[in-house]
Length: 156
Image (tube, rainbow, N blue to C red):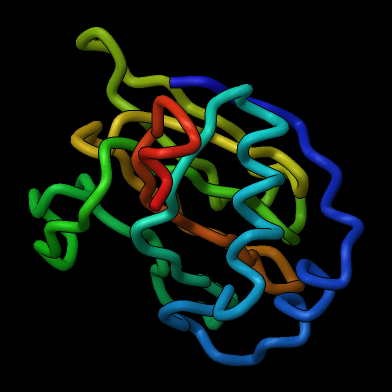
């Protein structure tokens, strides 16, 4: 698992902030190359995005945590997503109001606190969960699965 800080000041991210739906599949649409460049600049690896989705969580007084799962079909929605890695970019949300990510690494649980602009990258079969969020403003994130590519020929 790797954690990066990225600049989230772009028209792509601003557009996502205006989304009022809780879960959107393929929010990147025609802008997928812009987000791909954000990931490549942060990680130093060339990638091919295989899936992308947007999550928006609002506190309503009800538990909104998400249980242990991975992107290979274990737990959660049991969806097996293509790709070798997963990445989560926190876009907005109140710091110190929950919504943290817990990730199993080397038989330990590592807790990553919510902070807009934080990008978390891990292997797609890594178990992770999201804690209950109770901030007054929505917690939003852009999530992807991807494959690393070795050269320009492999990207096609």
